[in-house]
Image (cartoon, rainbow, N blue to C red; front, side, top):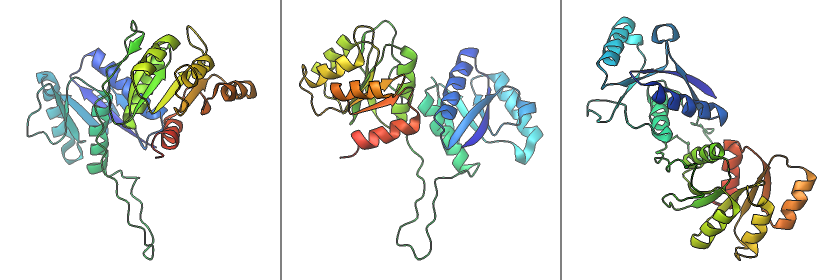
Amino acid sequence: MKLFTVAALGFPSSKLTMLEQAFSFTVLVKRARAYELVKDLDQSSPDIVLVNIESPEALATWEAYKTKKGTSAPPFAAVSTKIPRKAKYQIRLPFYAPRVLKVLDEISIKELKFVPEITIEDEDSENPVNILNVATLPDPPPAPQEQQDVIVTNKARHTVLVVDGNTSTQKLMGLNLTLLKLDADYANDGESAKTLLQRNTYDAVFIEATLPDMSGYELCKSVHNELNNTELPVIMLADKNNSINKLRGKMAGCSIIKTKPLTHQELEEITKEYIFSG
């Protein structure tokens, strides 16, 4: 994992907090590229700079810094509600994590020449050279709202249901799923999950073992019996993946039990096995 430092000029504290959360996520899931927000432009010598071009003060600070650094000035992305055509790298407000990470990844590849995904085979190998294509990440679904029991987002080709009463966990799962190009619906409890399962078709269900109104194992049984969804993969997320929970999961019909929280790599492996295997 390569850590790049990013300075952000001309943004209110709320926007900086959002960037810090998004960058913390890149470290948490151990991406090939991770990012860290730095606040002192002169002392930190950042790898990349985000400039709010609607702020005259930010533009002046950036131009002075660029002049001072000369050819060693870091690459930058222009950030605005309306992006000028001349900007080589641009991010449109409001901030969405996948939108920001996409541009930063592109800069790290094209300007900073960090491309660990390139693999070169031996000359005699018949396998083609695998060159990275910059992923185009979709904008994330609307963030789960704390006051709703059932949260429905727009449907994509593959959609999963996340059943968890913790809004923070929902948001973290949402970010991970978005990066894997999956859409998701969210339910805060078992009854809400049943409602969604009756209305919609899903490729998999992620269930927290302890729900406000029932256990996740009870919900899993209901999915397979009451709702007659015997082929639907159910991934149970428990505090401990011990022998007792494994037995409970097997009796309930769970496809697999994992310890929460899932890492990005674990989630990717699960989706490959249970969603994209066909």
